[in-house]
Length: 247
Image (cartoon, rainbow, N blue to C red; front, top):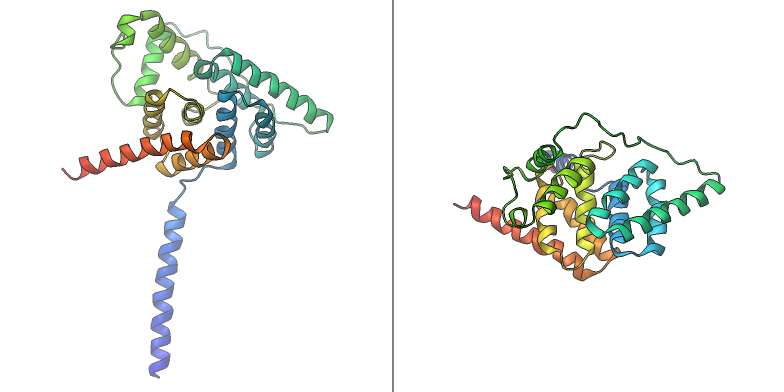
């Protein structure tokens, strides 16, 4: 009788533990899906000009479910971060990949095409509002520092990058920040911009666990040195939050 009672109690305790673990597992959606992982790889490899490995990852991205339009938009966006030459090389590589896949009888999803909105009247203001959503911070006009010193670059940033590019609904803000973070993580000498965009990404729902995964993918495709920059920035943000919470 005692053994039966002990066994029942043990079953109840085990059930509670399993339920808690199941609830925790269900509440954790902080992993990058296959499409997002492909976005990270394609963005990073385009940014450093590794076209051979880019070809492999473009095939992988299409197989994972990314549409042709989504990848095109990704590669167009990257010209603003890694320059026209690498963006154009990425687009040329995509064209070659699509032609090869077509000869093998693969029909890739075209996806939603970019449509120009002719109703945009003040692109600077539109871009400034987009940046406010991403940063969750009011944006002065012009931007302090570089904006006052070089107003044309401030106009290009607001009117073109955050109005023309970010406002295209082919990709979401989260996807666009994932592209930007991945490209900046792969490149050297852009740590301030990487830190700023990691903050923007977290503001719109990219989680620390997902950013840890970006770091792991950066280590896989680029280098541990570059991956550790992402980890260092995340560590600083965690420490900053801990200090704020302890007050």
